[in-house]
Amino acid sequence: MTTSPSITLNRAAGSGTLFTGIACGAGAGALWGLVFLAPELARDFSPLQLSIARYLCYGLIAAGLIAPRWRALSRHVTRRDWINLFWLSLAGNTLYYLFLSSAVQTGGMAMTSLVIGFMPVAVTIIGSRERNAVPLVKLVPSLLLCALGAVAIGWQALGKPATGTVETQVTGLLFAVGALVSWTTFAIGNARCLVRLDNISSHEWNLLTGIVTGAQNLLLVPLAIAVGSAGHTAGEWAWFGAVAASIAVLASVAGNALWNRMSRLLPLTLVGQMILFETIFALIYGFIWEWRMPTVLEAVTFVLVAGSVVSCLAAHRAPAAEKPAA
Image (cartoon, rainbow, N blue to C red; front, top):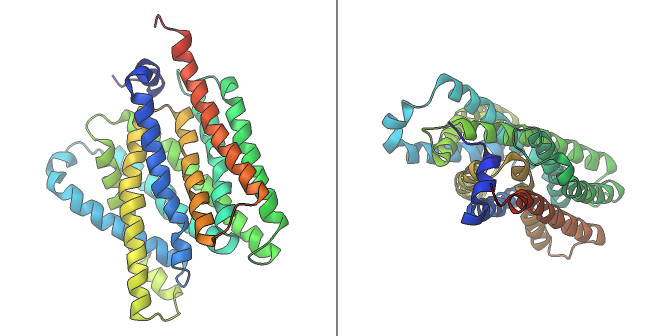
């Protein structure tokens, strides 16, 4: 019988499970934050080209890593698992990164990274309905801090169109919202799938996701060729390939493996808050890339986001402290 992740957390909080889960979440966020830089590093290429290149690399690397154990692993992958892998790959990788890349190139890195900061609110609210989850009332302070942070940066993004017209900023915001909805769906579905898996490790699930994602993006290659009419030099293609391969290794292979490990250690209400580490690191990378200090609203948002994570951790540690007899 599979143990509820909420129960696992309360039983093992003193033995390092909580710390390990948070460390994996922070590591995944640090690596995922790099994907916000990729559209800037390869600005001469379209979001579709960047998405396809990244996930083709992800699929090839995943296939190479899983090949030695495929015969034994394939016996445990059911038809239901393949269906789940298909829609999870579509929502969490293909569609998400298309939306994300488009949002960065049209609306800017700061606005995009902080719209994504709304994700924990949705994931945490849905996670609070799980059996044995922390009551939603205890998570209200964390949700309020997260929502206030996202509202603060949204106010700045719409009120000060620094990188284009108001129409361009609104378009970027819509792309960011699309990314938000897409990845929220993935985060919830993937966490629930990982809890049900018995004979497949979190790393193997990540590699299977990579293979399916690569296959999906292979079908998009003709579309990228038809749409991409601008010519590029050999040097530009080499740089583009290096960016795509680096993001595939760091964010997709390593980052996803850490995220899946974390998803098996922490309850869904806390999984949602771990997404904020991506926001924090994306902000840091964005400020370094743009070689500037944060604005007042961005600094306030940074503090609110950090406070949201700390508040959520406190809410999840409280039950174990209140019931020592258990």
